[in-house]
Image (cartoon, rainbow, N blue to C red; front, side):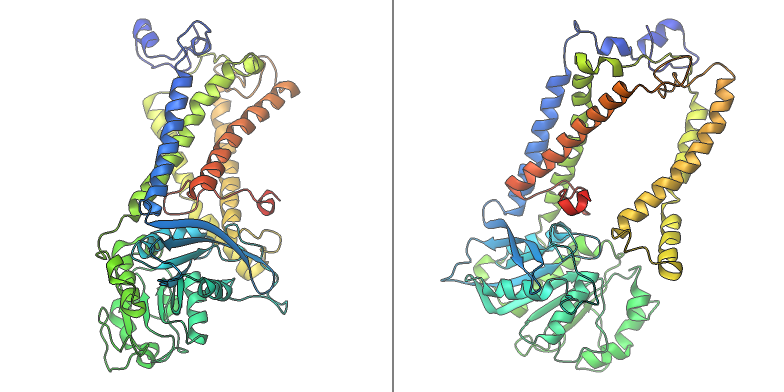
Length: 497
């Protein structure tokens, strides 16, 4: 027997009981549980995705569909259209455009969109141009560049729908998306309601423009100083010049509504004790938005649900469960593939010559945790280079992905030298690269092309299964694998490049 790991300090009998016998995993006479476990995870994956779809459609009360339309400059815009079944050409409903924040996509706005749609609003939840599955933006210096990244055209598209009351349309956005919504509403007096989250109104706003404006910003929002010029948002914001220009009274208070919805002059500031990233998935902020849109756009009362009765979080947990079930299904799938004769040469038999003590294990785990914590400072270095030394966005347009790759590169460089130092000590005791699974032969470094090809093929099959699962279920039910923030977007030709 060749145990995959050994528990040091135990007797041989106890050791064998607590060991995993690798050859036994591939024994053709063993009961094959892997297919059953694989099917269980696949069923869980499907059921979790179905649950996400049922929540998103409010159990059949909201029709959810993918729509694509052209921006004024010809760039395609994809959006998730959520229509309450009660909204018809004979009984049109108010509409809302939702715009996500920087380096996100439309699903980031599902929490707000689901709750608005189930209360009688037609919601157009867009992939801003350059995000999600919308088209690539052109260069800012080109004459047809759209600084609203499709927001203005999306508003026009929503108004054109026969089951939308064109005179009762509002906009909601988070962070950069809130800025886009704000810019559109500031210059379009027909936008009857605006909610900006994670963004602050500017000195360009007045007591009448934008109409019926609610600002939501977390007390600990990481960008509050840049956006508001204040350190303590709760104490300082309501006394700023921007606020004096916007509110119709002296010394307005946060959390109170001023002005008249029917005249378009309603104003309110809500400052929950949260951070920037929490603002797009915060029940109290969503409740504020629901109440605001109700007062400004006047949906049919028969569709109204108490603002605190929210179900969006069930959808988030369901899509997380789908993600975890998909990842878990890869383990039995990989085992089934390795049991096939074609992949037999990849199975490998660990030598069992090394066992890790518990103190050493925690030492390595701690080191790995320290390397993980380098994520933020390394990203700040990258953005500093981009900001002050050499712009890199032309060569590497996916800035957040660049940051992850940059972190991954440096962590592995540091990890390599750490491993090299450790391996020198262990090799003096007889360990070799075969023991680590790096080489296919014990006495020399050997990476046969045939085995490398099979390894790549095995990885490709597992990757394809995970991505096709996401793709197919997204096509059927318009839900993807995520929890709050984007995880797996479609592999468009642009992303392949």
